[in-house]
Image (cartoon, helix red, strand yellow):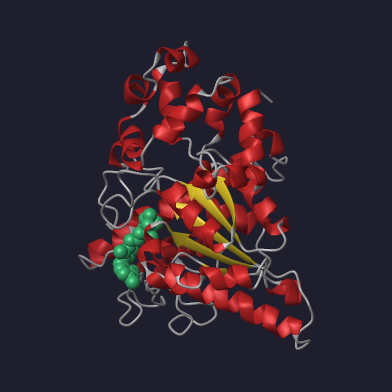
Length: 385
Ligand SMILES: Cc1ncc(C[n+]2csc(CCOP(=O)(O)OP(=O)(O)O)c2C)c(N)n1
Ligand SMILES: [Mg+2]
């Protein structure tokens, strides 16, 4: 490993360095917490799993589109699931343990308004039928006979046997997950329930951190050393109709928030397409450019592609040298390569989170809202319909 990269790794993995630089105590560099060298081999079939994720994106989008044709204005947050698809798939395929695991079964609080993806997956698994999908968001008066209504958001009262926790309004998922994890530990510590390796997973949005319920009990999770709790934040850099933080970096801000509250933070920022450039960047020019990048600028590249990235991002002779010989298509690939869509990077983060001991863990995963659709519709899309 080159000098500056081993320095960064040291910085990220120990608190010693932060102690000497108090102003940087709460932020590690804008890099993946786990460098490529620390990625375990992927245990699944990447091509197949990516294909399934894309099929699910399509089915979810079609279900929402058809529901809105049937009842105009019904909504359905069509772009959100597209951004969280891989984060769910790696969980479903390699981590989440169901009731067959007995007391070790995991509990999952899903990002509420990404529910179309859960329905799309249940359809693929044969748990829902086409008639059910036709009744999306029509649980009170299902218009298609023979099908059950699918609730807008996760709700066990509306759909018993399907959802386990209600996670909307925003903020209710994360705070319930904290108290659920705490209650499980409470029972174990008093001998009321045998100790188990069960994890509580909560998936939430970056914009969801505007809610006091999301952030109000973070300190409690750390104080109680809840290492049975894992938050996964879908950092698509957008909330409903605009950027979460246009003029700074939401991931760095959330890192400070969680680390300050005593959580272990794992960042999944960059996808594999950046690995070769990072390896070539022996003098830290790329790292310095990453530090200067703000979310608004990131979104611009995701929307406008490789040419824009070449002209505006790689804007010094040293940075231009780094991409010598790369085509616009390869650069466009870089604009799409965010850690939260890279199953290899996600797997590494989840494995580290599950193995971590002594404190709750948050994974901050950088994604693209509406990924998988026509690139021109990306961050500029009105994401609800
Ligand atoms: C308490 C509350 N306020 C407002 C809303 C309306 N709302 C639904 S989604 C959303 C934005 C979500 O942003 P984010 O958490 O970043 O999720 P994303 O769709 O970007 O993944 C808002 C404001 C809500 N569901 N709950
Ligand atoms: Mg968001």
